[in-house]
Structures are given as structure tokens and as C-alpha cells.
Length: 382
Image 1 (spheres, one colour):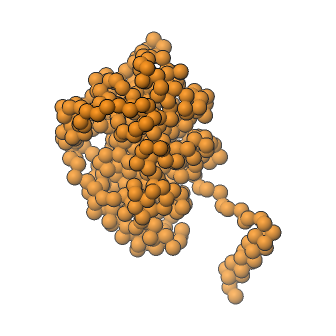
Image 2: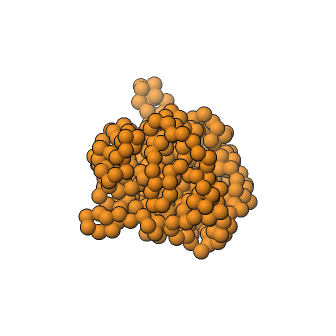
Image 3: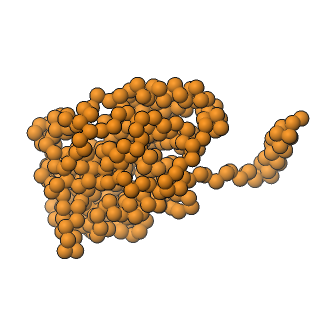
């Protein structure tokens, strides 16, 4: 018997003995990358089929988006802009993180690009920090109890809660930054314009609506009494070792007075310009934070209870949590585990998380199916 075989047999015997005594063998501590570095490991070192993983990456590289490289399709798609846009974007690119380690990357992963509605999941994270720090109380508390800027003054809007904002079920009525929540009109809303409809009671109807999300972002600014990007940097991105290249760009007109100064209020996407501009590595760190239940190297950044609720479907959404797309019904991420979840943005910009496989995938500027890419990566895990 070789020395390796003897060690394996000894470990097996010890594990069996502990199990019979009702004691579990200790699991190795999760790896967390330090700022400015992320350990790479060969797929085989982690028990992956290198050829199968390479084939999965080849599939991802072949699924280039048809979005204009220079964003010349922005207004036609989303409506008249309120904020700036880059002059060009990167080609499809991505990162695969397995058991905390980099096992694959492709394309220009350092390119800082708008990530569109992935920013919504980042706003949810800021809300978790707000609850952690007592800036907001129970999520079913009306927002207007703490935010008194006129946005929740009407009898309808006074009923809107933090949870409804997080689940996109507010039915909030009004305008913000020159855009009306009804989404009517091609000039204002591009291909996303909608037909008029009667509003239901707050909490009775799901609608994916950037005006209401932007109202949520402004409300977070109010309770922190600080711009959301500053909170996100100090309480989240600095903690997880993100770079200093990302930026959360406000609209040209989304500034409010705060303690005698003009403070930017940011958006939950890049529908009308601005938004979160970030590289794939920082997106991967953000996804890894959520894979680890909101904790980072012993520090609970987002309360574990909030994370659990965030990954629980809402009453009326299409398998939707707190600004995260879920898969409990097996429809949003077909073929993936029921507890997989994703942050999705136009483009497509995606973060896919599969706790069952200890896996985070960032895939940007693609026209493919993120679940298909995920299944192919999972197929490489032995």
C-alpha cells in the first residue's frame, strides 16, 4: 500500500469513527481572496474535467451579444437618456469561480462596463446593510415612516414598505428624475413602453420598474444620510477587496440636497444611462459574498436572516426574491438546482450562483442562456 493510500485509509477510518459517534469531520475553511489577488487553480486540482470546462468556456465565448459595441442602440431600446454612457463596451467575457478559486476566465475581464440591472441586486445588499445597522427596521414598515421627502406623502404611496420595494411590488405612483412610473411613451421608454393599466394596492402586483427602483435608491440615501455609492464602497466593496475601478454613475439630474450639499442619488440600472460601471472581477467578488451567505472571511456583511429572506420567492413575482432572480420553480434557470440564483442585467450581464456546486459564474455581453453555460460548467465537476 502506498503512503497516499495509507493516509486515505486512515482518514476514511477516522471519518467513519467520528460519524458513528455523531461527530462530523471538520470542513476546511472557505477561501477568501485578498484585495488585488485571486488564487487560480488548475481545474484538475479541484477535481474538474479540464476538457469539459474548456468546452463550456468555448460555448460561452461563442455567444456574443448583438448589442451595439458603441451603445448606439441605447435610446431606441430604453428611451431618452438621463445620464452618460461609455463610448464602447468590451466583448463577451467572464470568470468561473469554483470552491472559491479561479478555474477559468475569458475575454477582457478587467474592462469597466455598465452592468445594467445587476445593480438592483447591489441595492438589495445596501438595504441589508441598512437593516443590519438599524437604519431601517422591519421590512414591512412603511418607508414613509423614516423617509419624509414627499415621495410617500399620498395615501397610496404611504402604504409602500421596504419589502415591497425589494420585491418590486410597490405600485408606487409618481415621477422621478423626469421619468414617470407608468412607463407610457416610446420617446421616454423606448422598446420598454407599456400600455396604461390600473394600479393595484401596494403589495398586490409585481412589475419590473426602474422608476420605482430609483425611488428605492433615493430612500436608501435618505436613511443613510449619505450617497449609496459611499455606503456600498465602505460597507461592502472595501470589505470584499474589490478594486477602485468601479463607479456608480448618477443621472445628470439625480442630485438632492443633503446637509447643505448636493448629493448624487444613483439608479438600479443603466436603462437611461449612468448606473453601475464595473469589471468582471468585482462582480465575481460580489457574487461570492452572496454564495457565502453574506459573510466575508469571518465578517457578516449582510445579515444571514436577510440573505435567507432575499432568496425566498415573493408572493407575486416570477420566482423573484429581493432584487435577485430565483429558480425555486425551475423556470428562470432551467436545469439548474432549485436554490441557484442570479443577478441579471441587459446586455446580457449576469452573475450566476449555485450553492450546491460552490460555484459563481460571471458572464457578460452574451446572447446565450446563462443556465446553459452553468450546466456545462457543472458537467465538468466530477
